[in-house]
Length: 552
Image (cartoon, rainbow, N blue to C red; front, side, top):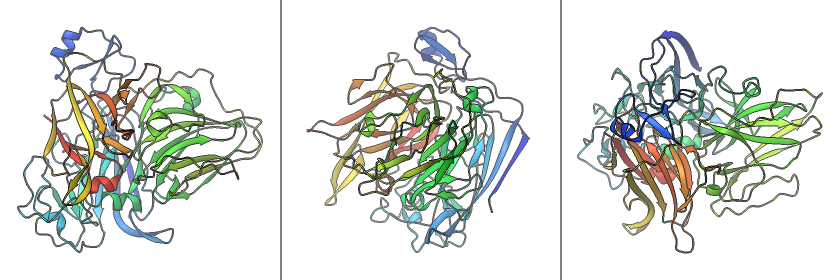
C-alpha cells in the first residue's frame, strides 16, 4: 500500500542558489566575482542580477513517503516495482518542503556478491569499498540491489543538513532484506532499508521531475521494468497565469513498456485515451522515463482542432509558451523533443469547433528516420514501441479560460552571463577499443569511481560536451542544471527556444568526420560533494559511460 503523508509543522532551514523571481538587485561584475562563493552570492543575467539566496520560512511541510521495492506482475510480466505498481506513487511537494522517503528493498537476494566485490566503485569520500575487484563492474550485476535518485531536484548529493539522513547519493547500495553480503558494514551499503531526506529550498523552482533507481550495474534493468515515479514541485499560488492555475492536470510517464497516465497513489492507465470536451484546456506533465536508445520522443499533433503549447522543460518554466508544430528536425534541433530523462509541460487546448483529434508521441529510433502512418496521420515508432496518447473529443462545448498573452514567469533560474575569467572544460563521449571490444566511454575511460572533474562551490563554468560517436547520446548531470548556449559550435540566439535551462540534452552525433557538441554554462551552487555525469541511455551508463564529478 502506498503511504504518503504531509505534516506542515516542521521547519525548513536551508536555502539554495536558485533566484527568486521578482527580486532584482544590481551589482557590479567585480563584486559578483569577489563574492561568488558566499552564501549570499548573486547570479548575473543579461545586465541584471537577481538575488540568489533568501531565507526560508519558519514553517514548511514534511512529505513522508514509503517505497517498497518488490516484484509484481505488470501486464503479465514480472517486474521490479515501487509498491507493486508502475509507475510508482506521485510525490508532490512545494518549495521549502522536506521530502522524507523510507525505501525498503524486498526483492529476492542476488545470486552474486558483485556489489561487494566492485572495489573500483569508491564512496562519496573517495575511499575504496573493497580490495577485491571482479573482471568488470561495468556490466549488469547486483540486479536486486538498488538506491534512489531524484532526477531534476537541486538537493544535496550526499547527506541532509543534519548529516543523519541520506540525500541524492547514487553511490549507495541498498541490499535485499535477506542478502548475505561480505561488505554490508561499509558506509555506502544499507541492509534492506534506507531513510532519505530531500530538503527543498524556499526558492527551489517548481516543476516536473521524477525519481528512479540508480545503482550502477542494475539501473537500466530496474528503470526499464518500471522503478520510476513522478516527483512534482508545485507552483506557488499566484505564480502562473490564471488559465494555467485553473486548468486540470494530468501526468504521463513513458516507460520501456509504453505510456502511462499516472495516478497519485501509483499505477495508472496504460496506453490511455483521454476524453475532452470542445473548448477544454488542460495541463499535461510528460516524463520520458524510457531508458532505451530508441526512446527519443517527438511531440506531434496532427489535428488542427487541438493546440499543443509548451510551457516548461526539464522542470523549469519557460519565459513564454511555445506552440508545438509538426517537425522532422533531429532531437538536438527540436525544442519539443524529449531525450531519455527529459520532461516537458504542455497546455492542451481543444477548439470549440473540434470534432475529433489524436495526439501521437513517438519514440524515434537511432537513425531518426520518420515513418508516417496513413491510417491516422500520426507518427509511429520504427524499431521501437509506439508511444501514443489518444484524445477523444466528446460532449458539449465548454469555455475554459485561455489567454492570448504568451508570457510566463520563467524558470526561477536566470540565464548566466559569461564573465571572464571563467573555467572552461571539455568532456568527450567516445568509443574506445578496450579488451578487444568497442566501449562507450567518457574521456576515453570506463567508469572507475575516480573523480574526473572537480569544481569549486559557487563558481560559474562553461562546459562543452563533445560527441565523437556516430549515435546520439543523452548527456545528464545530477544536482545542478545547465543553460545551453551553443549546439555544434554555433551560438544560439537569445530568441532561440533551444537556449534554455536543462539537466539532460541529446548530443548530436559525429557527421562527415566532424564531432557533434553542446556547450552550456552552469553554476555549481549550494552543495559540496560527489555526484555523476552520464549517458541517459541507461544500459550505456551501466556499461561504464559515466564519470564521477565533485564540488569542493
